[in-house]
Amino acid sequence: MNALFGTAALIALLALGIATAIGLGLRPRPAPEYWASLVAWSLQLLAAMAAVFWVGFLGISTPGCAPNCDWDLLGYNFQGFMIATAIIQFASLALIVLLRRRPKVWVVPLAATALIIVLCVVSSIIAYKAMLFF
Image (cartoon, rainbow, N blue to C red; front, side, top):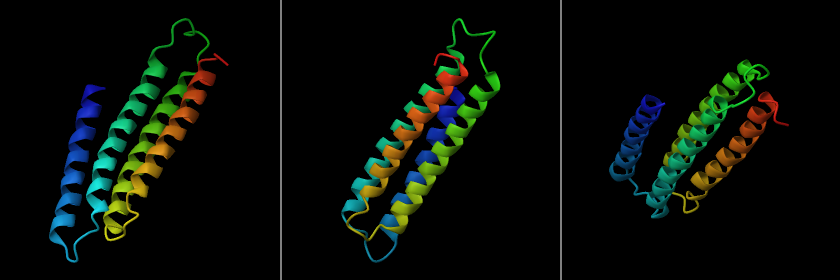
């Protein structure tokens, strides 16, 4: 799990560096809100990592359900959530870069964070169903 988060952090740092270079290097200059949206994207990254941590550890902290748990559903749920979170992260960063001249660019990371939270809740419900707690 540490290697997963370390690799994700390095990739995200590289992507953030590219987005910063694009903002600094291309003309015309981006809107002032562009820099705030990159900071908001960094906070979105932290929220996404916390959500992946939560859903991942739901699958391994299953005391008392070992004979009855649906392990395949738990695994697919975690993998699907991880993939969806990564796609949301990179799509939101691409949208931030593409919309860098618009003053409402800060809405993109906030909407993506809300989507990640909703997906985390849905994925947690699926995990609890797989552990037969509902």
